[in-house]
Image (cartoon, one colour):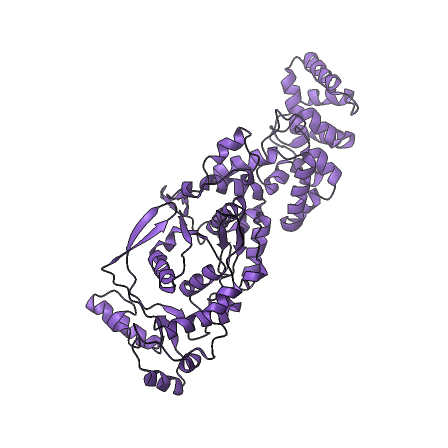
Length: 524
């Protein structure tokens, strides 16, 4: 057993004596009182910019597995990488969680939930590792490490700080004290006992047991510049003391899997179960091949895209959920469930291959979702979006709530034949824009039958019921020797500027007497 550092030297290395013992921490963060089989999950983003669609996908799985099992879903902000932190990123994360309906419970008992505020906890665990000889202070500079990596490259060795290349892993107490006396600030590194020639077996809930080479690198646990932990160490400490039972993360973390399992075993802690989800992919427009959704190339990689463009967040979540639980679509179409929260997700059934994000399929989910909304709710959602994200024109459209309600209520009174042409809130307002005079564009290319328009206008009465209205159209057609549909098409284009619209009678009823007459006269 390697000899550890004395308490006095540990205090100097860390800058202060540890605040807690390991027993203190176990008592401070006790096992959660939850039913058997309850999942404790966490969404743990770094505040380094936008909220990625892949992050939303993982957070949805986290939230669903926890809530359906009577467990706990947490939001943990992993803000230890201060160099990459972006202002307002935490606000963006919280806004995205709220907008997409992901509710988390951050019990103060297990907080704080910002890693930068848990420094005392990380240092206390680091002190324990230093005392047990499982970690050591390293005084190598960036230049020192680059020289080592360069020599490794020239010799054909894997680059990194390990074995004989870990210069400071066996410093004596006097040598450590000399560095500290000289004002040198150490990082705290793992004293790795791993051998890459040996295998470590790590169990993924979906993928099963995976064999990896053991980790032999002396990774940094505590950074020298700010005393904050690296991701690997923070993940270890927080998932143990927050009592996380399941870690859902992208498959890009598979290379780190053996390191994390080894860290838990080193501490003598039970490791959470891991679920490595597939990446969110798309078909590349140029190559036609499937590739990972890119935050640099693809606007839809940023969840703000869906909010700004007015996609129903419920539909986005349903589509993402169906990627993770492929039986959901069938269950909903058969009426077995009403929403994703009614459908039981099975962790072992989460797909391992690249999940394809198809905007056309999302359009289908959006149409289907909007078709289920009662008109008052549809109006409320469109209005809320326009007032928050819309242009001045779109805000103008939602200003008269009664008129908007009448416009959006067309062809939504028959539950068996509800129109399904609305996709996003922006597109919805664009589809009905011609109802507003300021947005109406007369059709200058259509060859109007002016006799038909004159004859209809002469008998038009806004108070006519639908049968009377239609009989007048038939009478005009018979008088002029043309088809009923020709008269209707002339009216449709004159009133909307378009050849395809909702029900013509309903459209005229909503527009009202003055607007109908004005537009027909304009066409004449």
